[in-house]
Amino acid sequence: MQIRGSLVAAVLTAMLAAACGSGSGTVAQDGAPQPLLATSSPPAKASSAAPVATRSTRPPKARAATTTPASHPATTTAATRTTATPAPKTTPKPKPKPTSAAPKGCAVSGQTASLAMVNQAGFTWQFSPREVDVHCGTKVTVTNKSSTDHTWTGNTWDSGNVASGASYSYVFRFAGSYSFVCTYHPNMTGKVVVS
Image (cartoon, rainbow, N blue to C red; front, side, top):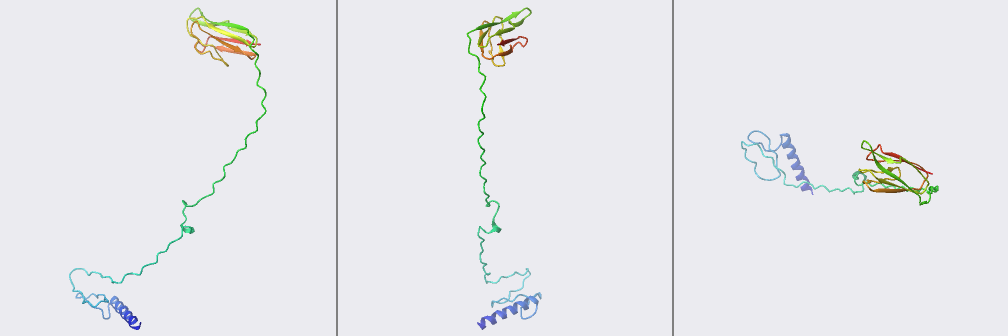
């Protein structure tokens, strides 16, 4: 062990001396100190090229690989963090409200009434009669006696297109006043009064 220790001490002393420019290191022809190598090969000849650095043949010490466990707080990323998902809120079912009875319509009475869509002088059209009074449950029929198409439209019914010569019926089952119009000819208006 002493031989190895003294050899190491001698090599270190020679390297230190070479680095400081003094001691037993070799000197190149240009006067620059050359590092002392631990081999017994002769010094390299000087050339006009820049000096080439040489490396020691001794491999560097290997560093021990260290790993950090994934659960270590310093390595936890936002992507790996989990948060508790709140339970879905349950909405209580609303209690049914007591409903009032829907108004009962009157029974169909079997009575009938008639309206007509007619031509007037000067290319105007009218319902005739313009107002009809009926009892609840009466079926009212409108007939197109003019030369063009019309509609019979109220808040609760719409005949759609009524062609010349065609008719449409509606049963009035609730008391009240019902205005109507021809959607093609807004000047054609009228009213059904149900009692």
